[in-house]
Image 1 (cartoon, rainbow, N blue to C red):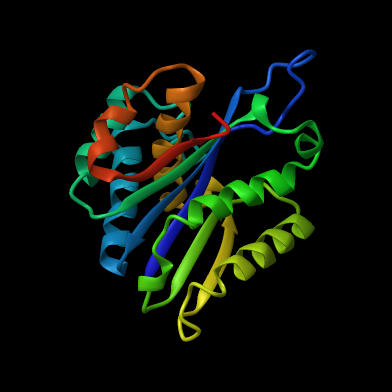
Image 2 (image 1 turned 60 degrees about the horizontal axis):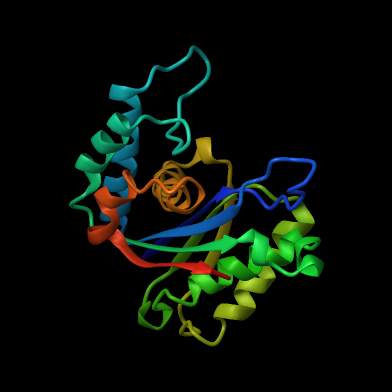
Length: 214
């Protein structure tokens, strides 16, 4: 069974005059094969939360790349570095995007997500594939995203291999929290020219990482 956790860093705001949106937008997929490996990854997230983050009463803590110290990130990675998984990511240079497209944010999001998925070897999948997405869309947008991805993967997945797509809030899903940690490191490389966290896992985990519209 394949588990694909899709998360993003940055935003899709394009008003660089009156507001302060991010300059870049990164979509990352953390891919892991096997129920045991997926369970091990989830346990790493939970262990890091329990041992390194303060749990507020009635409000479970979660791992967030933007809010977690480098020390905690290193602790998390030490516990999951031996779990076989792959990171696939694409970062959009928002200033290079056509003005017309900048007004259709959902289309941009879906397209970048599909470009990342193009790099994942779905042809090798022989068991069920679960795509778990950080929930940030309305119900109609979720339906459009799911349909778009299903169409894109139809010719690459064996018809006997089921594909399920789920949308969860990040605090509900430990796998999404792991994806967020790695995604933030890639985003930070472009947004702040800071690769300190990325360099820790880049060589062992990153299978594809590129800049769209450099």
